[in-house]
Length: 385
Image 1 (cartoon, rainbow, N blue to C red):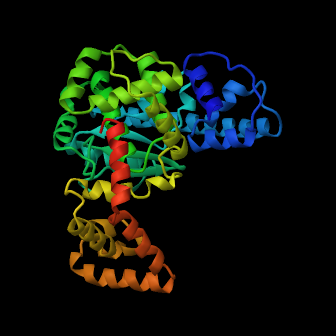
Image 2: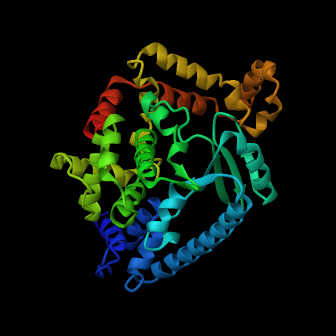
């Protein structure tokens, strides 16, 4: 882990990495887990031993090929939408400030448009060969082409159990911060903090999300840090932001752009251990399994009734949830068939031997015991949440 952090620090500061010896399979596995293997190869290619050099060189070639394909498709989309106001957000925008944008791997490209333009934009994306797999009014619309994912948004924040009303209202009033097809970077930066908070509280976050903030802080556009701090304080996001800045200084030697209240030394140890375990989105850390249940019932004081309500929703999913599954596509526009689909779903679970597994999954995401709640609340307090 120490070597990986040194490599990431060297990369964003455009500094050569001093050769070292290590357990290369473990380091490569960790880099892949946090989706920074391209950076590992670039920084260490002169001293990585075989056969690991060949393995990483192959991965590097794949990253570069995928990046070129994505950029080509993005250019076609931009050209197709030249007469419609839109902007990109998150990874595809942040990547421009990395020393080598291709190494900022992303799962999807996010495009934001006005609600009234979604239908027309949808037509144009389909005409470019993108396949729409989800198009619900209250969520992002998802598209795929050649293993590349694109998301079409008309909101920046959707319904989440971790949401805070004033934050949702603030960030969904974003068009006043857009000029032409560019979102103001001060507002964009604050949204990235909110987005980091969302992933941290849900499944978890890895080093790359913090690296994004470090890259913008050290290599990004000119920010109005005084305004950003004032706005984040109003939104109760400043304490969390201070933790992010403190960690980026500790891990990547990126000085906070404004004065912060540093956390205790013990925070750096526990935070580093947590983020290392998480991987890119926390799915590799079994300790995050109870986060969903904690978040879903936190606002209701962790009442047993709220946990039971969530469990019933998991066992008997609502219409909007079920119509997203291809197996139950026949339910779309036929809500009266919902009870039949519940029976259909139960029969499938029995035939496929998934009953116990499904029940355990629902229970894990619905019920949180006292120890789990107290442990997670302690983490939230430590992180300024």
